[in-house]
Image (cartoon, rainbow, N blue to C red; front, side):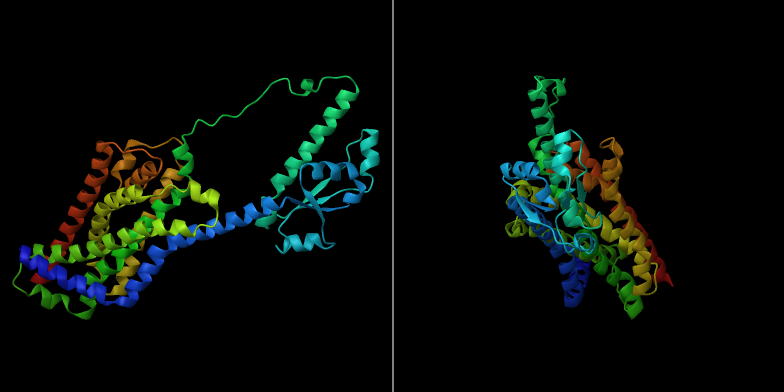
Length: 388
């Protein structure tokens, strides 16, 4: 039986690798998309950092507020005049900075002790401009604090009365946990890579052969049905494992392309994390290949199998969201749900934590159990098809 299963495995693996166009699309969509998104995010953050380093404030009517201009220049900011049609440019996302609008009577109102109205004009649909609103608001708040302090000093009042309670924020999160926030997207990408890596091979070896009419002659060969099932499953699982390996390793050179030094320092994903991810994903690749085969073996065409496996794709893509929406932390049952358990364990690896052996055994055991049940269904359906 082992020899027969090995023969089927080599045949199915050769067929899966022969379809180079499909394999290339899987590699591009599953392996390259993660590092590409990482590079795009780093490019966006790098642009924001460059704009922050420019230290510019775009304003209208700053000539009416020499006191405010003096404060901004003392904070090493440069005031730049905004275009007359700044509102239209903000709505069209052609202006990437919020605009400070100063009223004409700013200095006179300030001298009388009346608060002049200063507007910070932005557009919530303009992400570039919206990102700079907080920085500008902090600058204006600093100007307010300075003016209030000077007025109290002139009247002989201690500025400490404005702050009766001293408040200091302290973050108790571990440094590794904070660094893992950026790499939290990696488990999702590698998980989907495993799924799509196994998908085409699992569908082609079942529904594809049924559609081509080659499944029935294959069932007539004098070999145990278990060998046939194991060979087909092994080929589909091997392709999924190969894609998982390439997807995990692709993030290592992907870090070299990051344009933001701050993000590159925060991104925690090295050879140890890649090896741990691969070890956690191998059982899941086998389980997903068996599950997809169990669904596709019931279908008469490849297109029908694609529609049937949509439920699996949707479930695997949504299960990681449980850890996002669950604000109460990790629950024990998370380790018993395939895909969710792998996502949870990979997240812990990124935080620098070593998962406990019972948690790893629960994750592997649930994947093995799902794999055995799905292969049992495939074997039963193939036996029934051979009898017909």
